[in-house]
Image (cartoon, rainbow, N blue to C red; front, side, top):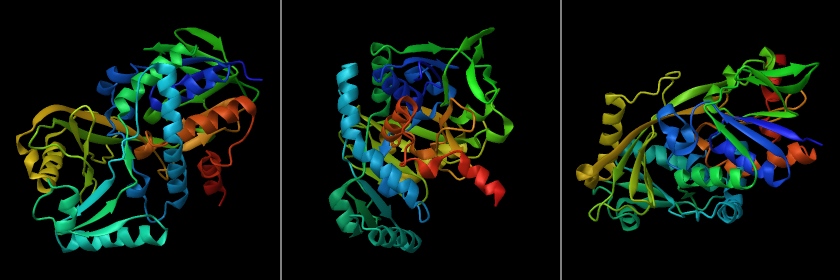
Length: 382
C-alpha cells in the first residue's frame, strides 16, 4: 500500500487531490514553487484567475464528446464535493446556477449560434433558441441591438477563489503538509520506479509523485523524455469590474468568440478571456484589455461606468489535443494530473475523486480512459 505521496503544484487540482488523499489515510506533502491560493495570481496561476465557470454545455465543441461527458460527470459531482469541502474547511460554498446566455448581434452571429444550438439539440441538451427580445427578458441589461440568443439553463459557476482557500484549509486540517516557495528540482527514478524527489539540496523519499504543476508540468527534471507531458501555457487575460445597482448581472453572458461576462457572488463582474499562445509571458497588454472591454460593452453597455477592480493574467495548461492528462505512466508511482486547459475548475471533483481512488486502492479509473498520457504514445506509433 502507498504510504508517502508528493504532489507537485499547489493549484486547485493539486490541493483537491491532496485533500482527498489525506482523507483516505495517506501521508501527503504538497510543494508549490510560488504561492498557493490568493497570493498566486501574480504568478499566472490559472485556478485563481479563472472565472469559475461550470459550463460544460456552453464549452462543448463539435468534436469533444469524450471531454464533454467527463465535464458533465464532474458537474454532477460538484454538490457532493462542495458539501464535503464545506464540512472539512468550515467555509460554505455553493454551486450557483446562473446558466449561460449566448447573445448575438448580426447575421454572422446568428449563423454561428444556430450551429451551436443545432449541435446541442442533436446530443440531447436542454437548450433554447431565443429572439433578441426573449434574450432581454432573461437578462434585461443586454444591449437593445441583441438580435438572437441561445439559453443554456443548466450551466453554473462557483466562486473559485473561495474554493481554493477552502481547499488549503481542508488539506491542512485533514493532515496534509503544504510547502510554498519550494521548487522540486528533480523527480528521482530508479529501475523504472519513483523513489523520491530532490529539492532544497536534499533527497526525500516518496512512494508516489503526482505532477499537478499546470503549465509548468513539462519543466520538471527527472521525467524521462518519452513521457514528458505535452503541456504548454495558454495565456488568458481577464478584467474584474465592481458591479453596482445600475449594472447587476444575474446570468453568465457570452458573445461571439471567447468573450464572457460572469457575475460573481462577491460583487465582481469577471470579463474574459483571451486565448493567447505567448509562452510563459504573464503581463497584461493594452490591446487585449481594450478588445475585451469593447466586446463586453457591446453586449452589456452599462458596464461603461463600472470601477475596475483588477486586471489579471493566468496561464492555462493546454495539452497537445487540449484534453486533460490524468492517470499513471510507465514509471511505477509516477502520476499526472495536468493539462486541464479551460476546464480546470469544472474538472476538479472528478479528477480528485477518480485519481485518489486509483492511487490508494489500485482501482484504475474507466472514467479516465480517454485522458491517459499513453494516448500520445499511440499517436507516434500510428
